[in-house]
Length: 510
Image (cartoon, rainbow, N blue to C red):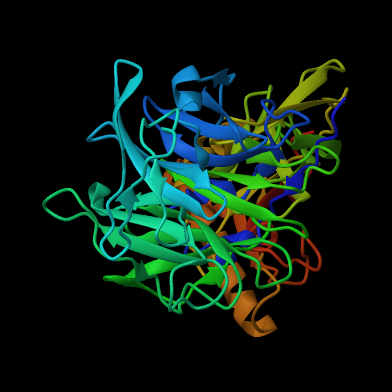
């Protein structure tokens, strides 16, 4: 079995990737950059976007394959060797102009000459194959044997190595790599030529010192004329770089973060509909491979569910823990007990997340209950079971009213829960109840005492509106002296301390 090396993409990349608008932000978390199943123990390199929603790549630098993208563009289907492409004797990356059904590629003509060609794709065949005419880089026809793929041979006047073309400006500009054109920055540089009205091409222009260095720059790919991706070996290995558009030039290039780069060579990146693919040597022992992002399996687990309080009126409370990885950045964590009670918690949350569920209905006999947790994107869920109380203590204790920070008004969820509380309290028509308000740990004692009393009063007023007797209701503010979650740090932990509890304070209803 071939060894596959997985590179974990950490959530911390969200900041580092902020400027990479062309690549979908969904890959910032929950995905691993992995070697694709189509890879072999040979080298899969020189990836290029191609006709009919396909990726073109070369195996061992000489055999061309086409692999269709999946419908979601997030992976590749089984590759097929393409005979017509292989007849062109392609060397390196290609550039495909879908509007003109035209392919640009390089061909090795001699030891000192590798030139750019074009051909038109029609009915699966390539016609009008010709060498690009580039201003200032002329050649004359020779008498030596014709080239098998183009039917032409040339007698070189100059040494020219032009490689790895990439399209820009709707096909009117062609980037390529060369180390033989004079007045470059040193080593291999990225250059571009523009197509003129007569179909020939302008003199090469260096991409500039914001892109090129004294080292080797190669494998250009232009995304929507806004982002230039390329590789450079200025760090000792080949790394991927990117630069944003600055009109007719490019801003200073920056190295791409992990996992796009590793400790070995990473190069030849393309982006299609926000999904990146790249070539890397990091799959140790397997040569160069094509890598893409693969979504991690669901990672969420409910555990440690414990009954913490038994109530009269057929209700009880539990606590539990939800452990997860790669939670969505937005939405909610939904927790539902099969007794019918459910709660939602706003994301983002920290794992493990401690939750409490109050006022769960209890049967008269011992019964196994199931509790389930899932994220609102619907991709991940987990279940756990626990044993509900066998007997209900003859007392009344209810906690369910959580408040926003520094607020004493009932939330919409609390208003909805009020009806259930009233039903339970009406089972004890002559009982006296204490309504105790609480605050979280932030703020002074005096301020929190007043705030917690206002919260208790808000619940009392709502109960009176529902028909309960005012003389049977006593309020008290307990401030921050009885924290439900000690040493709270997150907003969700603080929220569980901002509560109101209702309990019976006489025994006449036993």
